[in-house]
Amino acid sequence: LSVEVLAEVDSTNTRLLERARQGDTAPCLLVAERQNAGRGRQGRPWQSAPGASLTFSLGLPMAPQRWGGLSLAVGAALAEALHPQLRIKWPNDLWTVDAHGAPAGKLGGILIETQGHAGSSRHVVVGVGLNIEAPPALPDPRNPVAWLRQLDPTATAPATLTLAATALVGALKLFELRGFAAFARRFEARDL
Image 1 (spheres, rainbow, N blue to C red):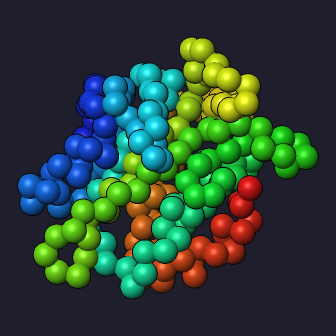
Image 2 (cartoon, rainbow, N blue to C red):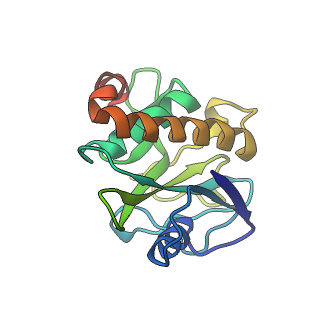
């Protein structure tokens, strides 16, 4: 697994998918200090700023028997690795909860895309965006935002990357071997 860090990029997912289309399917963790065209589900923009957020993508070939539930498996693994108060809002968001277990704010998102290539496997790219610090301008209160330092004042982007990337690699390997069944209970415990 190679690890690359870029000061700025349009989208880490886009870069890794372009590499796969050109035949480069070597496992790679691509981290951007800033994304200027990051995106979430349904093409929604995802903003990032150096140190205040963490944006990265992991690309690697995979050949699971079934793909269903991959975003939930990834969400469960990330939530477990990052903080006990994190939950998964179906299908691909990480949310904090208040003392009563009610949704408090969106802390991050997961974007999974695949690219076909020769053989039975596909090249999967899992993009993750996490708020480490409060965004410069808080958005509409109908769409509450959360950040990791609310839960852990000592959190940093590099330390969070270590936790998240390690959990992500492990989750993808386990998912490839055992599918969503290996994550069903873990997801249920974190399902918002």
